[in-house]
Length: 113
Length: 114
Image (cartoon, rainbow over all chains, first blue to last red; front, side):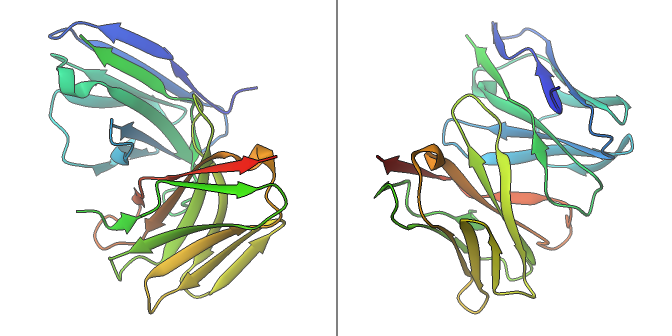
């Protein structure tokens, strides 16, 4: 039973398109995150939601919009995709906002051509 | 602005020997540190953590040491096993306004040779 799942695992799309990545956790955690791992391999936080409330919103282009319909789901929508958006996007969750041990999904490799 | 640095991109050790992975940080507000392990095509997996009120935490073959004055932590794996071959990320939290944020290093690829 997958704890944190992401769909799709791979996403290839053209510049200018709009795409979404979905994340679901079945751990009963309150807090969820989106990370981006770029070509330099840094894992950088993008957003975090705690019980559907946005608590972390890093300096990310406003083409990226997270949505949390409930505390088990956190989706990432990206408008007008650019070449530089190509990366691996990881979703993660933790029991609460002040517990730092996070459980990661398998990642979504986004390639923008 | 790299607040968490892992200066060794790779490390190779023999099976049965000790692996030592190092991490340095610059933000003195960090008060909680974690190590994650990542296999190819998978997400990072939490390995071990340490609070700044401690200088050592041990879990089986894994021990993390924290030297606050040097702003340095290390992960020791003894004995190393081929299954430990992975990328290891150091992460830190507590750095000022965004207390809930983890800041990651770039990772060190550990290869354990049989």
